[in-house]
Length: 299
Image 1 (cartoon, rainbow, N blue to C red):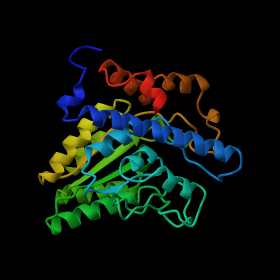
Image 2: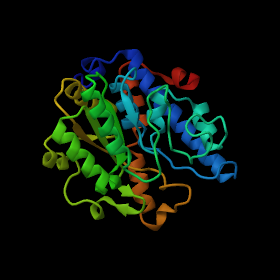
Image 3: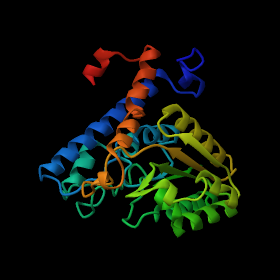
């Protein structure tokens, strides 16, 4: 790593404690994900949708927002995001086990349907992409009430082909609303690879709606942080929406009901494990002198 790349987090306004915190949330989300998968395989939990491989972008985005006031509309793989914005592992486990104490839905909804009034995480529904017009509506409310909050919404790249996505983007662009739309492009919409989903680049769709679109490496924590931070600054300054395409890879099957080897090869998956954002960010912290094996063991 070059000298210029070391301590990049300082250039972005992040403290040493914050970047260590980002890493800890990424690892926490990974361990939660792995544990719930094991519980499902042993019949203790009925169903699980994994976010493994996407933790870097999710955590970075959360840290770039104002978690004291922004409204958050995550999608069903965003465990790292909600763990970074106030929800706890206990909250998520209560949902996984469909317990009445589940703060998201009282055990009525399946896993990945997050909700927290306390942390301004807006209730999600099973039809994909419905969260986009909801986020745009919240941004409209902020503008009408002259409030300082920004709304943030995430979705998979498959969802960017839905009507709700385009209607939401169009309305947000027309009214220059303070909303950040982040597409977590993990290369697959269930079993459909990217090249059979989308013609052209997802981030360039923003051009047609009159606001900026940017593409970032979703495995690069600091690149995603910078993109979301810049988007939030634009939104808060009244400059309107931003579309962010964070390119990553879904390292696990679509869900525990899916056999992903029917549509992709083991070699492809293994190659993408080499880009796993967790060891990549761990190496960055180690190079900066902020992390070591003793800290890893304690974690």
